[in-house]
Length: 341
Ligand SMILES: *Cc1c(COP(=O)(O)O)cnc(C)c1O
Image (cartoon, rainbow, N blue to C red):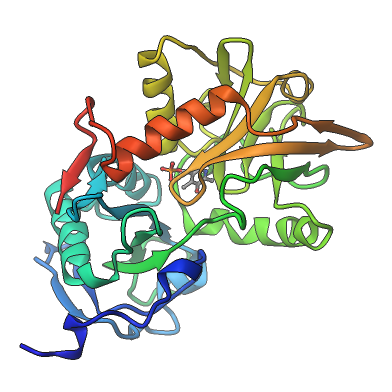
């Protein structure tokens, strides 16, 4: 063919960061309550046209997903548990009164966007192709009620580490005045409206030298919820603790995979409320998500108290090695988590 997109993309694989780059193609499908979903199609990457009265712009009726395609050492390209993202998006759609994307369509969309942007999948070990499925109410709506029409779009961006420095332990600060989600709200789904309110406290902490903030629960301001947009883990002895899913915490697929992996490695995993004071007394702490993968926590500032966890702990490192090994295809996948594109 000789089309320009057959060649090397204009990317320096060695200096990838977690930032936006326009790629070749994206997937778009249209849906409505009356006629369901169109098949959708792959089109060139381009801006969308929306009414200024679109429900998503005025009332935040939308959700997103985040997942990664990776290149294996032998050059194949795989996705990690994409059916879990499909199911979480379907749950989110129900919460936000949007028509669900059938799981088969979701998988078809993320596979074809990966395939169509294959040249943007970084070489093994250099980064990943981050896929961003979004679902939102696209038609005009003046009163606060669900849109009639919806769009499901998937685009892709090559990315490097979410936190600068990769496995260098990050420093965090507990947010004293802001909370991410309240009981009965939308914290348990990837609703777009959950994220802008976190920008101000997060930006402030970053300007003071921290990598991110830790949110405590909104009722007692005592239990750890999440680290920005990643789940929290701490390790004491041979036991791993992570906050239980109470509806205010996003059910991360990385979180679930770490729990399953740790149990298979003979470690004990306890899902319960994790008081911040308990977390501060642990041997190791890390956060986990698709973007962050597993990021070791080096220190946590909580009011006047600063807890230092030191260098990367052995359990954190063991989980990191096994999880990234399975994800990247460098070690065997006994769980059948990866799907080849
Ligand atoms: C996406 C997200 C996570 C991590 O979920 P993964 O499925 O592991 O990527 C954790 N917390 C929040 C708030 C998130 O938005």
